[in-house]
Amino acid sequence: MGSPIGRLGSGLAHDSTPEQRPGALDPDHELLQRPAARRALVDSRPIGAWILAGPALVVALWAAGSATGLIPDTVLSAPWTVAHTAWNLAVDGSLWSNIRASAQRAIVGGVLGVALAVTLALLSGLTRPGEALIDGTVTVYRAIPALALLPLFIVWFGIGEEMKIVLITLAVATPVYLNTHAGLRGIDRKYVELAETVGLSRAKFVRHIAIPGALPGFFTGLRLGATVAWLALVVVEQVGASDGIGYLMYKARLYGLTDVIVVGLAVYALLGFSTDLIVRFSARKALSWQSTLAR
Image: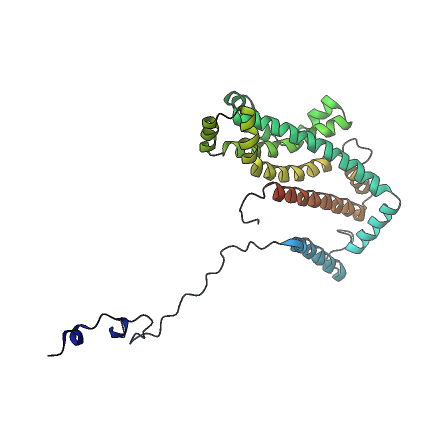
């Protein structure tokens, strides 16, 4: 008989059978490979200037279609024709004066809309009476397209600046209110209980908990509101206006000047895109405490 150690083994790793030793070859299988490093599920690298790739591709396809004749000039002017027209309008000053008029309306209406929306969202999101009076009313209002109110606003305010500003204000206020209100109502109740425990006043609660908690929703609504402001501007500037990009496009439509119409559309697109970039940059700075896919 062999020794007990010989029969039972010493208990050391080198005494175990090949199948038992870590990394040993299985008789029927190759050496098991270590799993490769896991690939990131989401690519969260900064996009930077690549955000312009989509618009650049659209312009490239447009240019290719115009150069090959697939897009006739009577349907859509070529990019180089539009660029030449924009240059002429810029040189004679008409483009800048109309941009200035449009920007002024959008800024005034946008600021008033944001102020109105935030005020209503705070009242509705933090108080039950406010929610009962405001949230249902806004729900009914948003079921009515803002532009459908244009005939009624013309009767009430005429075709002057008041009508344009009021319509832009209400158009901007709706998405900002909805998203800010949702942000407020989504604040975790434990933060409210903590504020009550430490004895925070209502003003400090709003400043330190409610407003930071609602900021993500607010900036989402602000991006939507900025886009809606320019959309509303297209319509109101074609009703009784004497200046603005919409008025420029309206005159061009009467004479069939597609190049001027496309210049107006390009200006609206650039203004809307620039506004969105500003809002996104502001949101990134204001929400730097968040750890999200955006950063």
